[in-house]
Length: 212
Image (cartoon, rainbow, N blue to C red):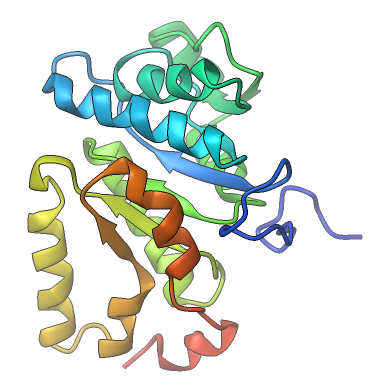
């Protein structure tokens, strides 16, 4: 029997059409002191994903972009699931209005449950935790263990240095040129559903060129 929390347990709903069972994992930050534009973008992303029928799965926090994302989903009557480690509930508290809040033992379990069953992963700007989640997802895709679209919302050009670094990794031979297709970049949250739908198909056989 397939473990329902396994990355192999992927629903077959399409990112293009959304739908009640289509899930999108969103990585974002809890900072309260970053520019307000980041929080506004998170709220807009939540609203547009809800409007397209996606269930949003995120880190469960109630502050910063995390809280704004959840508020955006809920403002449109959408469904949002938070995955929060128990120790972080004491540290920063979870969002109190979520459709569902799941408490887990550690960060590893949190990342696994956020991504399992998703039809795409979206990264908003954030700190080292957000970047670590994003890069792990890119790594899983490189290895053929996660095959869904990855979209970066490049608010205020935040991801430009990371994109330059990834491009350099390709240019210097640490990654294959085909790996550039693993992620899509948009400037506005409203472009995310289209980017999810238009992302190139990524086969499990991609692991054949994971190592150079």
